[in-house]
Image (cartoon, rainbow, N blue to C red):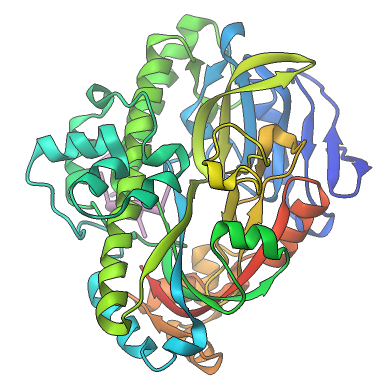
Length: 470
DNA sequence: ATGTAC
C-alpha cells in the first residue's frame, strides 16, 4: 500500500483497481504503525457505488466490520449512492454526552466518595439486561424509537436545554419503527438507560486545561469545572438491527448489480426499499441511543443533587456511529449525501445553520472520550473542515481484549487508578483489565493529529476523578 | 460494540 504524504497528517492512496475515489488518511506515521489491515479496508470502501470525494480515515483508524473504525464515506443519494450498515457499525449511534456541574472540582472533593457510591448504585452497566427504566410495554418503546430523548424529557427525565444541546434536537427524523424487528425490540425493552460494557463509561471529570476560553465559555465550560461524561450507545437493540439489515442487504446486492470486495460491505441504494428500511431502523436505534443517554443523565443528576447539592447542565450530545443525509458542496455544486461516520465525529463549523443559536459563533462541540484513567477532550468544528466536516472519535485499541487481560489484572488496574487519585467503580475485574490504558493508543496524539490535519480545534482537556465502568 | 458462537 503506497501512502503519499500530501502535507503533515494527510496521506493519499491513489485509486487503483475498482476504487472509484482515492483514499485519504489523516494521521501521523506513528499512529499508522500496524494499520495495514485497516488501510486495506479504506481501499475497499473506495469501491462502493456512489462514493464521492474520498474514502477517509481518521487518526484513530483501526480494523472494523467491513469499514474501518475511524472511517468516513459519503455517497451521492441522487447518483445511485448506497447506504451500508457496516459503514455505521454494530453500535448504532454510540456517542458521547458531556454535562457541566455548577461547581468546581475542589468544591466537591469531600462529597465525591458519596457521589461515586451513589453512581455505583444508580448506573446499570455490564453485558445483558438491566436499565434505569423498564418501559411498560410496546407503546412506550415505540415512543422512544420515534422520538428519542424528546420523549424522555416529555416524561420528566430532563429539561428543555437537554434537547437544544443534543444533536438533531434530541431525535433523528425519519425513524421507521416498523423496520425494527421483534428480536431487536425484545433486547431493547430490557436495556433502556444502561451503559453496557467495553469502552463505555460514565466519568466524573474536571476541566484540566482550557485552550480557547471564549469557545469553552460558549459551550458552558471553564477551568477547574466539574463535569460528567457519558459514553454509550444503543445496546443490544442497535446490534440486532445491524445484524438483521446486513442479512437483508447481503441477499439484495445481486439484484442491484452491486459487487463489493468484502461481503461485510453489504449495501443497497439509499433510495431502494432495503436502503430505506435500514435507514428507518437506524434512525430508530439512534433515537434509542439518545434516550439511553438522557435517562442515564437523569439518574446521574439525582445522585449529584442528593449527594452534593450540584446541578448538571448539558454541554452537548453527539454520536460517532451514524449515517446522515447532509447537503455538502462538491466541486462547486450542492450534493445530497449519505455521510457514513463510523468511529468518526461530525464537526460542524461556526455559522452552520443546524447549530443552536448560542453555538453558531463557536462551532459544534466535539466530544472525545479518553481511555480509562486518561484525559478526554472537547474540540470544535472549523471552517473548511475536511472529510465532510468530520474528525476523530477516541483512542482506538492496539491490544485485543485477551492480550490486555493477559498483560494486567483488574486489581492492578484499580490500584494504579487509586494511586492516581481516580476512584473507580467497576462491574467486573476482567472488564477492568480489558480496558487498561496500555490497550489503547494515546488519545492526546490522536487529538493532536486531528487538529494538525485541519479537522478540528482543541478547546479543553478533561481529566477523570471517578470512573463508573461496565 | 454484542445474550463475546448459529
